[in-house]
Length: 236
Image (cartoon, rainbow, N blue to C red; front, side, top):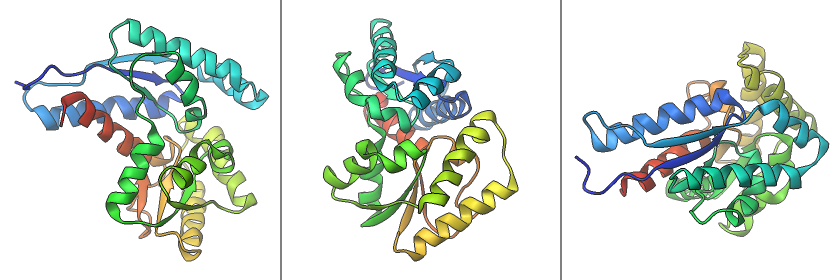
């Protein structure tokens, strides 16, 4: 038996469902490990049709996207969620709108990642993710300005490869050896450029690559985010 009531996690998922499935599994595994017995995670899930979200992303209609996510988060709060997780790095661009539309905490994936980076003692890291995540400041800037972490990103052609693999393959459940080899090459070049570790800053990237594929330390944001959520929900 847990000493205190387990909190309910509200997930904004489906962006893509491939990684949301991993969130669900890791949250349940984490709660079971923490509490034992037949315990599992208390989860409410709002799963979007990713095609609709992707259309808004490509059109640059972030205000509408923010309204959609904020409304869904409010629905999760009304249904009993105690905390919100956005199950994607890219859509943390809209974290402030989600926070403004709810009265419960949002566990920000970049803050959880920064804590993991500091715990491991890294000073300079590289960031992989969608082109939005790598090139805009909502994620990289937060690591630099709020947490004092030095962040580098791949050069332009490699950024395009990273982005295309995410949207054209990983979000569709496609895993190819050619893409894995490209990711390893990019990661090892970033390591040579001074990155002590590489952030897998898209929740699908962990489906393609892991520490078994390279000696460069990898920071899987899906695992980091779910571990932070488990600590929050069980009070440990």
